[in-house]
Length: 57
View 1 (cartoon, rainbow, N blue to C red):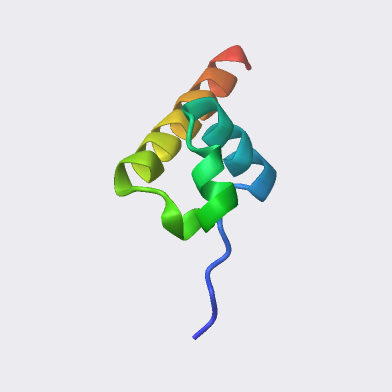
View 2 (view 1 turned 120 degrees about the vertical axis):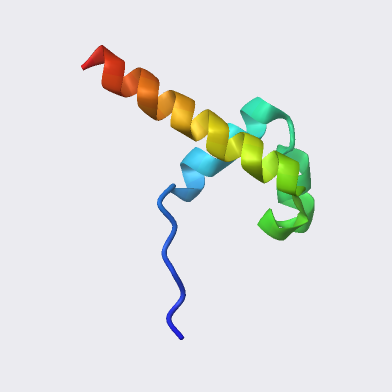
């Protein structure tokens, strides 16, 4: 089965992880080491950024 390609770039995900305070976990354990809550907060923040970007246009 083919692996799905993510919508967010690695750089963007790392920026979000830094902003939300769990980048150390990502560096140490990889993306599989973050909690479900952290992943949800990351998606929520990405949506907020996209909405802000759309409102500016």
